[in-house]
Image 1 (cartoon, each protein chain N blue to C red):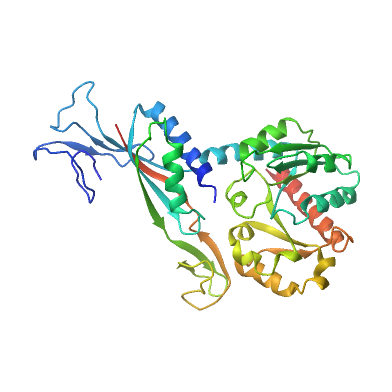
Image 2 (image 1 turned 45 degrees about the vertical axis):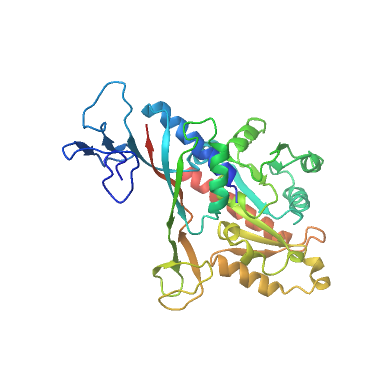
Amino acid sequence: MCNVCGCGQGTVEGHSHDDSHHHHHHHGEHRDIHYGTGAAGVAVPGMSQDRLIELEADILSKNDAFAAANRTRLAATGTLALNLVSSPGSGKTSLLVRTIERLGAHPVAVIEGDQQTTNDADRIRATGAPAVQVNTGKGCHLDGQMVGHALDHLPLEQGTVLFIENVGNLVCPAGFDLGEDCKVAILSVTEGEDKPLKYPDMFTASRLALLNKTDLAPHCDVDLDLYEANLRRVNPEIEVQRVSARTGEGLDAWITWLNARLAAKQAEDTAA
Amino acid sequence: MHEMALCEGIRGIIQDQARAQNFSRVRRLRLEIGRFAGVQKEALAFAFDVVMRGSEAEGAELEMLDLPGRAVCYDCEAEVEIDDRFAPCPRCGGGKLMPTGGSEMRILDMEVT
């Protein structure tokens, strides 16, 4: 709608003009598409002119630019970056500690996102792996820029596995690309089989779901098959693995998955 | 969702545009929001008013346009439009739908002076 002449369906208040005014419609890409001159159709220097600027810009385009820069940077070292997403308390950090132990000498780095405290990074550093804690303050998710800053402080050897432990939140982190290769969702069996249906976006965005704390399943009347069925209902492509960080159940399959992703990533980067 | 962070993104884009295209005020802003974007419009409108204070878009009129949800059906392989995240395929009734559209969050255009 032209705000000056009111052509189109919109309404214009406090504006009148005769029929002879001129205006131009430019529908070029990402430029001014609509240039309305002053009320009488006369351009007067210094006079305010209303314009319609067509943008079609993604609201998160700034974040996406930071994420793309991170992705380029990570590719340079063949780093496999996994964005670990979950509710608070799903056991992400415990699972990560066990995973790092199992990866042994393989280079690993960790970015820990939480609103407050360095507890999680401290737990990771105790394994010997380098970790950077990002405290988001009031923020409910990590963003591309935060991860870029964290990368400044992390040594990345060739073929590193970088785990980005996002803020525990099943909503917001789904929308923010960090430059990762893929998202891995972690759920604990105690959360309820309908979790994927309640927060579908996160599970649609994830490549793999780790169903953690399977050792507790007999104590909480949970139907693990239903859990998996609900995950596939929101994402027909999602891979699911049942694990227990506490007993070690299922961790071999998870490590095998990691090694396969790492090999695929290195093959990709070599080809590129 | 993260309506506040989205508004900060909008503000950043407006400020970049204000410099590049030389305007001082946004009168009206139109957003396109996908059905599955997880955006609560009321929360976004509230955050918009708060976040735009002191910027070119302070007091701007905000309009939000809906974009439909889209998905590919893994049973009949059609690309279909769906309103509900868990709706069956409108063509074959299948339940295996992978969302392919509807997560958009875009600034469509703005009227500036």
